[in-house]
Length: 511
Ligand SMILES: Cc1cc2nc3c(=O)[nH]c(=O)nc-3n(C[C@H](O)[C@H](O)[C@H](O)COP(=O)(O)OP(=O)(O)OC[C@H]3O[C@@H](n4cnc5c(N)ncnc54)[C@H](O)[C@@H]3O)c2cc1C
Ligand code: SF4
Image 1 (spheres, helix red, strand yellow):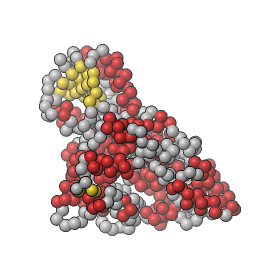
Image 2 (tube, rainbow, N blue to C red):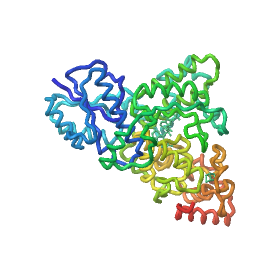
Image 3 (spheres, protein in one colour):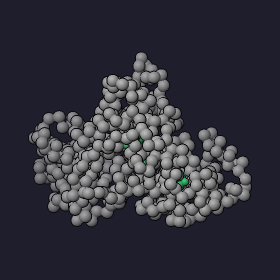
Image 4 (cartoon, helix red, strand yellow):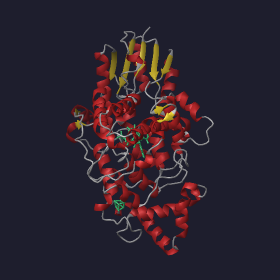
């Protein structure tokens, strides 16, 4: 009896029970596949990050005594067809059983179920042992609910896993400290020197070039600054808990021209490849909070961080599996414009857009508010087609995997799901951007002006969006105040605003 076990590129969980003890009757199979490099045009750091992490994982398994077949992208045995690859290994090694871990993407789930039908041997699928919730638990939680509010999901997770709970109540007598987390960062508190990963990836760069794999973005000095193994992920986590957590909540929404990461953890790639588990990250953050000798980390910083992982991350996964496959095609606001070309070049006069896009191209990273309130906000205000917006987000970020990208982009950011994720669209004028960043200080546009050559494009686009899409929000209480301001607006002023917005939408390259 010999079992072939498939490990996908985002299933690098070395603490999975599969790997407890080496077993000569278990053969692990991993392969670098064109179907993964090509389903969208990815950032070069993302492709290299996945392959480097997969290679490190295979090596780690071998060192522990496991038998691993690993096919590089250009390995002669790699047919670039997953089913053919598996069938060849099954024949070569006289395999009698096939096992795989539950894929997190609909695409791969579907593909593997089909492959299993064609293998002609017993097969089964097991849990990845990564998330707090299994798919079945998520299904049960969301069943029969009209609205799937993140806050109630998050509270139930806190109770179920007894995280930051005291005698049945939330610690600090409050579930949510979000209202305290809204500070602009003005150069202090200081951000300690960043911890680097320094992974040499010259060989992988050459390989992608040789094989003609398309990519976007850049990678400096053939060095990848993302964690590719558990030790590096733990180092990043230690650095975060030691130096950044104390300011995480306060400056969570802040943006700055000189600081790309501010007090964010940069753990999303390690989490989404399952190199590190959400439980480990949360436990470590709580342990640091409890063991501190001073009280520099306050409960609201800690709770803000826990909510992102225990709440938002698991909740988004629930939405994805509940709503797929139809979710991928939703376009409730009927937006059809093309995403402006400068999303791929950062070549725009709008300082906020330039910085958010440039750092995405340089680092395959932007933090949540840059994704939501800068690039996402602009895409929605210019009424860009959600398919194009999804393609961009899915390609450009190091952490972008469809199960988490899609509900964030199509749902939270573009409101294309009609409010399944967000009760109102995340749109704003330049005022919000000025409040939370220093972008406007050095911009050639004036964030206070709605019309005129130097008026901030976000302003006219914002009022134009409300005006054109108001029918969709007529019954939405959370939009009532903005719509009432719109109705009170002087007709001539609104007409000028709309003219400017149209000009911006038709000629994005001029702005
Ligand atoms: C339009 C848009 C697209 C996004 N696409 C992705 C994506 O493809 N992959 C992805 O992992 N996140 C995505 N996010 C969520 C969030 O922006 C990133 O998780 C975060 O910026 C990663 O950086 P960090 O690790 O420094 O996060 P931190 O700010 O340090 O937060 C800690 C962790 O919390 C989790 N988290 C925080 N917010 C969310 C969220 N809204 N949904 C799910 N998990 C969250 C992440 O795992 C993150 O690593 C998207 C958000 C928006 C608005
Ligand atoms: S003025 Fe407008 S375009 Fe310029 S940085 Fe501010 S919000 Fe962005």
